Length: 318
Image 1 (tube, rainbow, N blue to C red):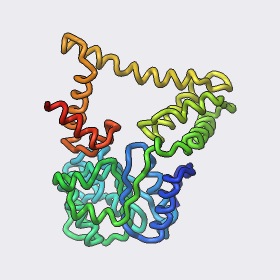
Image 2 (cartoon, rainbow, N blue to C red):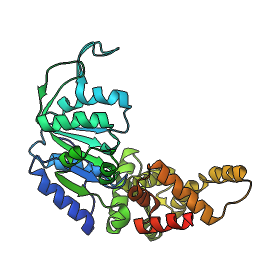
Image 3 (spheres, one colour):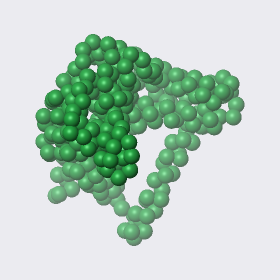
Image 4 (cartoon, helix red, strand yellow):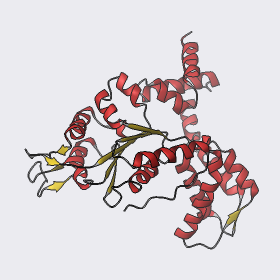
């Protein structure tokens, strides 16, 4: 049985997620978990596994964007001896490792189209072929996948296979961002405080109401992961038993200071200060280009709705 982080949360949006996870755990249906980075998608994937009949088998997580594309195929499917240079012995892939259990494919939206086709075949035929082999091996596993991308938009733009999308999305769970879970911020913060005090074997520390108010007021664009990192930093840098508000404010100040070299370089290139409107339009164009024109994802990254994005794009063309 796998071990996952304690499930912390009492907000209505998060309770809906937990209810859906418990309901789908009773089946073997594939699950697609969507949401911004840092919202806890893997925590929910592990919860589904641990509540299912597969709980005594293996939970195997893999981040599809963290492994170089040439290596990802052999990681997923395994390989035969001599299949390629350096393959001195046969090795099972992650599909086989998760047989009987659950394979968690994080950042599935970053999977190459070639591998998407192979994944679709595994889902359809419930068997896998190692790289360099000619025979298939039967599989019995559940696929839970996750992404921060808009897969529907990727399907429209032919960057994600529609048939695979529907195979993965038998049940869909959308993780709410932390800014929509205000009731959960302080319980999570105190959980992380206890966690890092124990990890670093430190005596008890605490903070006052001013810190509580500060934590609840923050937008936490990096979601639960950003909150956890902020609490760890405060625990490590606080010399005494009291964690001051200043420690958290310094963290925010350091993040703001990280942008100064960018602004300095921009001034040097342009030879002048850009207006806020020019900066606004330039940044929107950069985000759109980075997201390959995906407007829904770009609007989420910018923290605006699609109508506002369209309006700003329209105004820049006038």
